[in-house]
Structures are given as structure tokens and as C-alpha cells.
Length: 259
Image 1 (cartoon, one colour):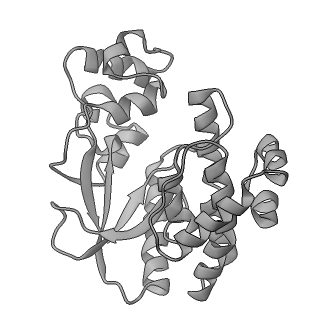
Image 2: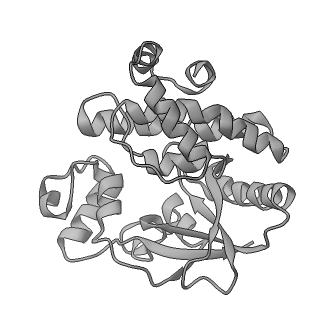
């Protein structure tokens, strides 16, 4: 718990709550179940943060057994702060709502390397034949420049070859609205987003009714049915809003990229 509070968590209010939290024993039991490979369900709020606090040292130990330095794991674990901030923006209260996603970080399965995040995952249908691929995620924050993304791919290639040599991978894969070819219809070719999209070969994927794009660009409270009231404070917001209101789509797209 102290390691999590002192080195990972950045929210001072939640730090104080966790010090005297009355569900610590329950959270520790859930964390132990996760460490044993059991599937668990927890409600949103402070409780999942406490569970992850008990898992943080486990992630460090698990990664160090493979030789992965602590700094890499700490950077990966700190992603929780983004989701705590997002939860407050969406719900106007302290807590966490992305426990199932953060489990990957806190069980030593996801790594923040440069601008991007990566984890080994079974290849999805549409990816050229191979059992595993390096799944790629785009954390919110700094600019998504082509240079930083290419650097991250090189770091990931070297990282997985060094620390997971038993797993043969031939491709990166990613599913995101940021891979949708329709981005070229609303943004200039020199934009960072379009350059990122062009790094991938797209394949058919299940529609999400543009919900991820709407949420990421306009905020958590917006969906297609209230898009008319979405903000137009940036050029991307203006262009995407007009495109969607005129019948366009910006669904999640699956793509792959050769290692």
C-alpha cells in the first residue's frame, strides 16, 4: 500500500482516504484472487483503487523476475492517474471505473514504452496468420507525433524480443477510431492523427456507432443522440461534428503493422 501511495498515486485526496480505508482487508483478498488468476468483479469507486494498490508490488515482482526494470513498471502503473481524473470528470466524484482495463497494468501484462502502450495478445481475426501480436494502445496525453510513435514501435520490438523471447510475434495490432480511414476526409494529410492512421493496414471490424470517437473528442457525456450540443472549440471537434451530423461514421477500426 505504501509503495502505491508514495510512488504511483498522484491524487492527494485519495491518498488520505486510503490511509484509513475500512475495506482494506476485503481489497487485499480480491487482489490475492487476481494474483491467483481468478476473474473478479468490483464496483466502481474507491474500492478498485485499493485493490490495485495491493497489486502494485506484485506487478513489480513479476516483471523483475523477467529482468524488466522497476522504472518501466512504475511508468505503466501510473496510467491509473489518468483514469482517476477521467472518472472525476465524468462522475463529479473521486473513484475509478476502469478496473478491468487496469488489471493488465497491475498484473505485469501491459507496458508503457515511449509514447504508446503494448501487451502481448492473441491475434484477432483479420490479422495475418500468427498466434500472437503486440497489441498497441494510445494513452491520452502528449501529441501523437509520427516520430514518437515510430520510436515507441522500435522500443516495443526490442523489449518483447528481450523479455519475452519464447513468444514469436510478427505484427503490431491496434483497434481504435484513430485508425479509421475516414479521418482523411476531415483532417489535413499532414496532421499527426492522419499520419498515425497511415502507419496501419486497416481490416474490417465491428461497428461501435462512432461512440469511441465521440467520447474521446467531445467528452464522456456525449453520444450520437446529443451530438448537436457537442462543443466546437477545436478544429477537430468542428470537423468531426459536421462529418458525423451529415451521416459520416468514425467507427473503431482494426489495423496491423509488421514488426
